[in-house]
Image (cartoon, rainbow, N blue to C red; front, side, top):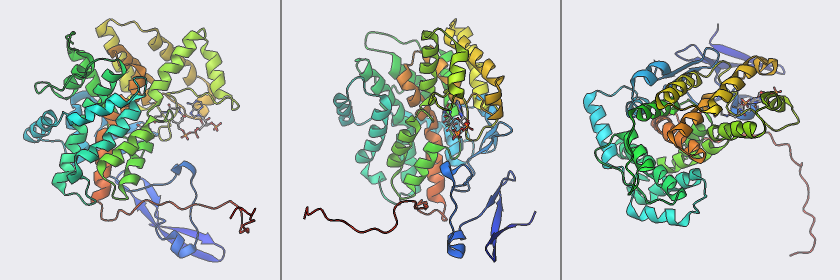
Length: 429
Ligand code: SDX
């Protein structure tokens, strides 16, 4: 294939360069399109538009392939830890023993939030959604680290931001949970590793010892790893766009948290459980809900199904489903919601509507069942997604800021409003 695409507009032919990625993906580079032709392209939801070149994560949606820095997700989920995966995504290589030890130790040292930030929690209603708290607290970190809010931070300053965010996100999330149940905050401990420390802050209390179960720690490691990055999804694109104005990393991540909250994105794990619970409450008639989802006049969608990129089974959903069975067996849990979810998947995957549209279970379909089994309340599910996705947001922000070709993101539009018209005064001035 030639390395240029020909665009014929009227009696003119334009040559547009073709870009080929390391996995042989092809793109037409339209960087000069408007200056050369005065035309722009239009692509609702950016389904056909590449925002950038990136070397962090590769997805092949047709073949159910997901790789972090080239390593298949199945191997990372099987052998790595969340802290090691975060390092791989952010620093573009697996850490050696010493690098991992230093990285891990820094989380222990930076786990506390400023005591003044505790006062913020007093202002929130206990029923407030924890994603609203997380988004504002993460942005507020920039008020406590003004030296890290420079438009052009040094590598050392970015490294410090990385540690502050990855370490403190656990404390903020655990504190927001404690606030919601009216229990006193449990501080991070220096003797506990990343996930165990988070579980301890969530579930232990001044009058209740929480026995950190290694099965649950391992399960959360895998869930966080599976959520760690997913190339240019809605929240990561938001993080990159906000960061492209040279806004600081705290502010860019805070915006990403807000984007993730939406039920079409990371909020879906909460909506899946609420959907399954309402199906049970309504008598368990799966066919009724599958038909509702197929009815164009009904806004109801089967949450946890479908994906912009995966037109085959989401590899993460496959791993999470297997993990759910493992955890439930080991913990002796018999959850009717899991049985219902499996039955729903079976019926959907046989239904022409879903087959034709290549709608399969995605990462959110089974994850909430595990969170619920661990004792995490539904409202905290998107927060769990945010903790997992944090390394990906950071990695993309750093990649974008380190790229000399990066420019402020500013899409164009096609105007379809009024043509020029005059102001008609009504004598109000
Ligand atoms: C995540 O991008 C990422 O990588 C995201 C993510 C990540 O790791 O960051 O993977 C995480 O966000 C997973 C997705 C979680 N969301 C849900 O589970 C919500 C339910 N899913 C859908 O709303 C939908 O599938 C999306 C939002 C995931 C994808 O939307 P698209 O790509 O814009 O697809 P679409 O809405 O254009 O749907 C195409 C067709 C439509 O039907 P027709 O117009 O062709 O008749 O499929 C139908 C849709 O109505 N459809 C569904 C459906 N999803 C799509 N019909 C019923 N139930 C569904 N879930």
